[in-house]
Amino acid sequence: MKNSNCIKTDIVIVGSGVAGVFASLCLPENKEILVITKEDLKECDSYLAQGGVCVLKSIDDFNCYFEDTMKAGHYENDPESVRIMIESSPEIIRTLVALGVKFDTSSDGDFDYTREGAHRRNRILHHKDETGKEITDALISIAMKRKNITIVTQTTMIDIIEKDNVCYGIVCEDEQGEMGTIIADDIILATGGIGGLFKNSTNFPHITGDSFALALMHGIELQDLNYIQIHPTTLYSKKSGRKFLISESVRGEGAILLNENGERFTDELQPRDVVTNAICKEMEKFGTDHVYITLPGMTSEEAEKRFPNIFEACMAEGYDITKDLVPVAPGQHYLMGGIKTDINGKTSMEHLYAVGETACNGVHGKNRLASNSLLESLVFAKRAADVIAESKAEKSESVPRIDLDKYPEKAVRERNFKKIIMQEIKRKDKAFYDKWCDDEN
Image (cartoon, rainbow, N blue to C red):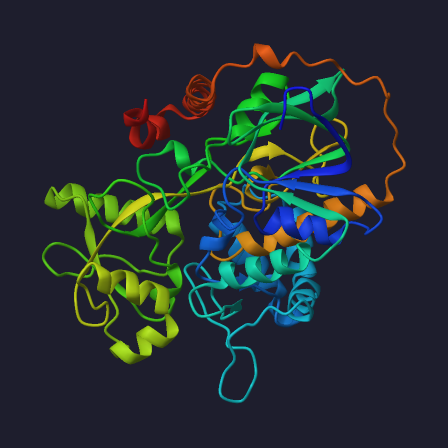
């Protein structure tokens, strides 16, 4: 972008993960849509999702699925959001299949449903251990063929353009450090979570919660920014950078956790926060910084077929997960809170929407149930797109003037954003901050 550039479009979507791209596909094809993404197209956390996507297999499972979600979320979930997500799931899965997404099937050709922690029934569809990659690839492939959708990589949102609580667009910076503005009728934020702010996280390092810093700066309502999920099992490593996730689906298929004495110490299929706390107690007890996971119920060949990505990552570190004790440790994984939205992705600012991990519609409560993230992203991205398509709301054509010279350089901006977010987490939950965040500043 050049400093003089001002791009105008119907809708701008910030983020190329499942939520952002699916929203673009659900919008009318007579709308000009610009999708920007901070790094390369597939460097989004949706691409990393291993376990699967939940679905309501039959109406008989509704109450059980609903209760599993509520219980995992410590009953702080919004019941209406949970109901909408579950009831919408069959249609979403049918849409994905129609778009070309492949889910694993059993020998008789039916879907192969698996189970993960805190689920009482098998209701999770998967594609090996790369479900997010399968879905993201399919959606991006279709979006790139749509004439009304333009995708721009290596472009970072650095500010929101707003006046009188109405959003007019965003300010961006490209990889050369040149800034410009994008003016749009409606703006959708799908920038993911905050993992890049943590020393140990399963997220890509550039996922740094920019939307939340900007929300705090512009008075956009947030909800439960301190509700941050620590995943119990990341592959232990002293190397810097993103931590490799060993999916909960591995424990769903029979993997067990062992302490330093080789003793099993917990029920591996409890909610993630419960398992994480159990692991932390064992590490404190033995003075270690990891425990172990092993999958004794599968052969190497079976594990390599069911979990090819995980099997390969463990082998690269010298471990056969079916025979060896693989060291694992908790790491930041997912944000349940975020920019507060209603059930249609609307934020407290007019013409500004949020979807995916960026949004908080209350569906996850205090702790997300395994494999609800992809489903939640898809369901509410579509609802936001539907509302935008049907909206006749107008706004003033008088766009606020933006002085591009006022913005600090990238390094300064990133430090400022991180400080703003971490201060808010500390304000909301000092105990969590002291345990998981205090070494980050």
